[in-house]
Length: 336
Image 1 (cartoon, rainbow, N blue to C red):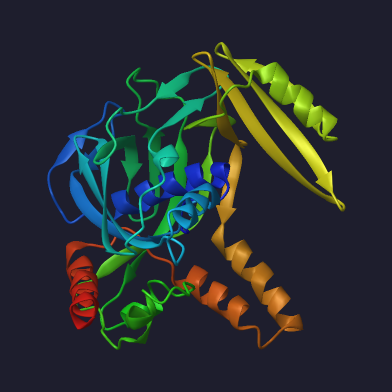
Image 2: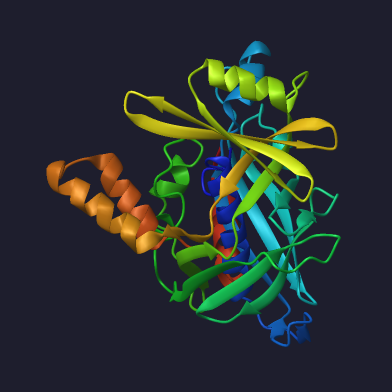
């Protein structure tokens, strides 16, 4: 799954919308429109870059097909905000021969206690959010849905960053260790004058939300899943929101707890994730925690890379910055 916004399912959703937020804040000029909330929203196009390593099941398929290496890709995401609606388009300028996007990431259905948010049926490009507010400090978006529900809101605070003269390798792919990005990490290419991006500091959401994916758990009912989880020692809690029955199983392994969620929707059992109301990510707090850990392991290369990646993480690049990144990627591809 994509390393920047495809972690555990719940984190995937919040970060994916944080990506939307950062993209929205960094607009390359344009006209403004009203999204119905009274706040003018500028039409804009911004760009973000990430890496994608498909989920483990995909790796198993690749191995069975004789692939010699795990699938991997550099992802360029173009976010267009037009008339208050954000649309995302993913491209893969660098990838292994066996790479394919995880099909279970294509669509998500958001369920809260008061509404169901069924998104755009298209895949790429795909409408992903109604943009309610953005400026250089804050962005607020609602998951795009055909029902026009607007109660569930994802927010980020972010800072606009001047990238002029900075090394591209200090901003992008800092913590990646795949050989395909090594030439990008070794380059001395810099961002030209006028390059900007957005650095997210806090991501949050205003409601508890269950997120269903396209992944269907075949030949199993909710009751069967619950029974199986209980046999494995899990504590199971079941709820129903807007006619959608769902369950949370909490496991304890060697003193560590972890949870799994499923939802029964349209007569099928779906893999799901849960995102509680409140702050989902506080980047500065994460950096502080890593620096505390670094005191015990001052020469840990992985910790140092994680800290650098978080401190410099940027999305929502403007066209000037994106052109420099694209030129570097083209240069690396041509040199092969």
